[in-house]
Amino acid sequence: MFKSFLIKIKAIFDGLFTVFKHSFKKRVTLEYPEKRPNLSERFRGKHLWNSKKCLACKVCEKVCPANAIKIEKNDDNIKFNIDYSKCIFCGNCQYYCKTSAITMTKDFELATDNKADLNVEKASNNGDEANN
View (cartoon, rainbow, N blue to C red):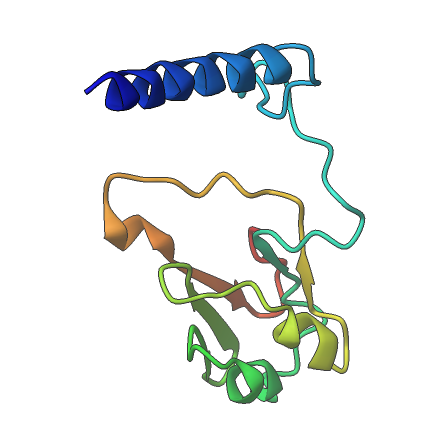
């Protein structure tokens, strides 16, 4: 009985020692959103589609491993549809785009209460610039 008591006391002191040891180390967490994280130059966030550069060749659609991108081309209109609920932000679409029509920004704030908001469609009419 006395042995189990000593084991419990030792466990308490081990826990207190761990807390004491970590209280002097640099903090890992940020006070987000007041303090913004420093993102790497290679960070892959939300997509930016330039309709003037897009040829609607559908290479981005073919190389997307998650099938998150759909391209539709009509006579004077190109539609770019990306489903961020499927996208894994691998960057294949940007890498394989021959005309650099797709770039990835550092925008990572995509949280929403409605899953339908993650399905984004952009269109170009007669070569006009599409919204990002």
